[in-house]
Image (cartoon, rainbow, N blue to C red; front, side):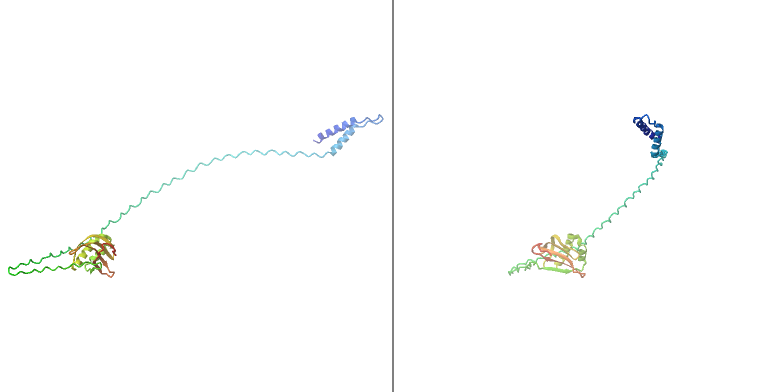
Length: 249
């Protein structure tokens, strides 16, 4: 490489020597060869030491791709767990058979009032004219709103009515039987109670309202009842209501 670099320099010096003016004939001819060599030697000495080419680094050895690892065989799916056997709902237990309420005890058959026996017809005498006195008529006292009749029950029938108070209006007939028995002790008896309806029905009092037919006089509105005083005693009775079904307690 250094030798190649000196060739251009030598050529330049040679050209310069050829173009210079010739020396007079008396001047000795220069030693061109010596001069060139001297110049070449000086140029070579002045030229910097050539830097050697770097050592060639060979390409790295080709590393082949690794051998492909095959995928492992797929694992078998787990055995399917079957659904649990369906357990049916337990058989429904039917409701117990309904026990009907006991049939109300029929009150004793009412003893009819005795048939009225009229006075005998007076016989007119042949010799004396006798004045027949008219049969006295007992006036019927009008019922007042404050009239009330109550009797203590010693037959336990009132207790049976109160203990079945949930029967409601079906107890009114039994209350009416007790009221009819009580009215026989008065001067005017109850023959029948019509159009009854329940007014109060609980464990302390059963009260019905209706229209009473009397043995004497006109029909009237009436309230019949059975009640307990809370001390173990039961009572039954009736009271009048001249204004009909208004103002019941």
